[in-house]
Length: 408
Ligand SMILES: Cc1cc2nc3c(=O)[nH]c(=O)nc-3n(C[C@H](O)[C@H](O)[C@H](O)COP(=O)(O)OP(=O)(O)OC[C@H]3O[C@@H](n4cnc5c(N)ncnc54)[C@H](O)[C@@H]3O)c2cc1C
Image (cartoon, rainbow, N blue to C red):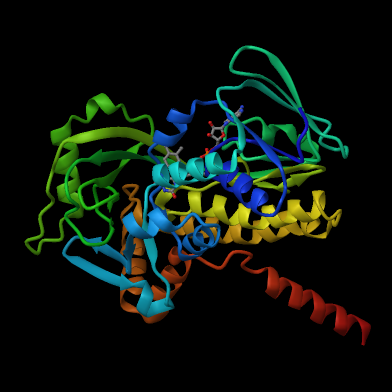
């Protein structure tokens, strides 16, 4: 088989990349280890930044999102005895949308069907070869057990944190930074209308809790739990009691419990790999970086990477212009590190570890964020999402100024 861009992974990054490339007249083939049904039903992220929504709309993927998604102006910050609303629209003129990753995935799948996109689901043994040359190729075993070879002009590694793409960059050519947090999230999906109009992020001595939602009838809630937590230790009653305690703010507000339809324990870590390019291999999304979900950034970062990568690959394989591909990693990493810091900041501000001094610092920080326009604006700007390509223009200007001064 031969194509222009071989895409590994049919998650949001891989399918969006194939969609944007097709729009620019570039042909791709997508290889995915799981079945389509599995990929479309994975319960994961649910908050879309303003720039993500705009990009999906501009790519013709916004109709159902706008009809069924739920725009939110901001969030609540909560700690015992207090609840404060941060209005992102008032603070930075941008809002976020509640729309499940499952729905984004289905919209992408339908759009790719309409275009006749070649996607091989349930492949195995994916291996990346000759990525340092101009003729990379990927070998794999197809669903029927036949060995296959896919030749391409470029390979896009969109295969998440456990796929083969990141590992295909030799250790001598990359650097990885990581942080494993001492806590996990116990997440539930429940068939009950949300007990709040907007998300509640709650600090509590027992641990963090988050009240999120997926629709008018489905709630998504999380509890901070220790790493290694066994779900069997958390019967429904214990989950709802802990959520009610941590989310309550002593003002008559009550949490409505309901039937739990999905539950899981999600370990939390940060990881960044650089560069995001090695020869003709380009990483995008979770294959290059992981963030803890506290800042709601994982899916949005994947979309932001792809928004840069699609034009860069188009220039490379269609126009034979390597410039944007050469800039891709540096440009993407500026936003990646900003979101990595924001996710770490939200995590360390809201998760308790039993240290009384730390707890007082966290409460002081929360009071500042909720009470000061400067503090609230910083959170709002990062949460509602920085522009795609954030920092690149400023870096370009700084380079130009430095160069001009150097020449004087
Ligand atoms: C359990 C969980 C819960 C999450 N919750 C949140 C949340 O609440 N909020 C938030 O913002 N983010 C959340 N995230 C993060 C968010 O879902 C990811 O950042 C997002 O899915 C990244 O998209 P991606 O396309 O880069 O990677 P993925 O969605 O991981 O897609 C990668 C694809 O590559 C495929 N693949 C892997 N290995 C191979 C292989 N060898 N060959 C072929 N294909 C392969 C995978 O099957 C997958 O379909 C969560 C992630 C997880 C794992």
